[in-house]
Length: 282
Image (cartoon, rainbow, N blue to C red):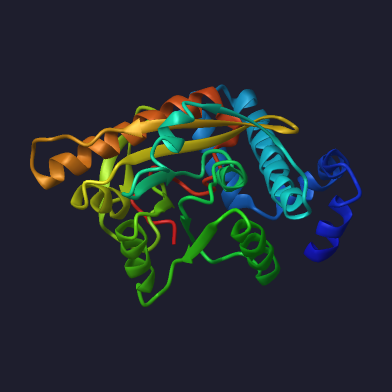
């Protein structure tokens, strides 16, 4: 089905798929009660929307999620999108330097689309991801991203991905990884997101601080059907303080940006679990 979808999107406008999703959406919602419940609580208790508005945004959120997934398949099929980039110099000014740097992404927006715009032949980008997609999706993603000088690092049970991550930075390359999901590890750093305490995975911030890396937070938000807005923000490294204080400082900056953009784009947070709970996502 996924191969067929890619073939279709080579000949048909992705908006036709958007229209079809309106019919498919109610059935999808019925099959995902826990995700629906988590999103409703998010809008009621974190965004502080009223009941009716919260219910409406649950629908809007799942529909928007379907759109960004279809946009990925459209990209696999060769579809080009338009991009608005804020502070592009914070990315490209470091491409020419010998040292590597880190990008912290999130499940707010559609970060994968950044790989088709924020790429350069001068410095390889290594993207850390959970290898939970189907074989077809992984294959298409790897093939397309490879043409943009992007290498995928899949999370592995034997922790071999950690060595790949360190090697990428040691080789002066870019390392991009999500910093908003704790996938199995109990090590976390507590921050404030949308007025409530939340736990972020400690790993990305430990890596940044221990290596004193240049860090950028990148969020890729859908603006129009064919346009994405890429926000690039610096995460400053403190010169003083203990290791834990420095980790907290960087994590707080990331959480502030996450809060700011979640308020601006309330329909585009795709964490379908209780982000504010003590339980890791995986």
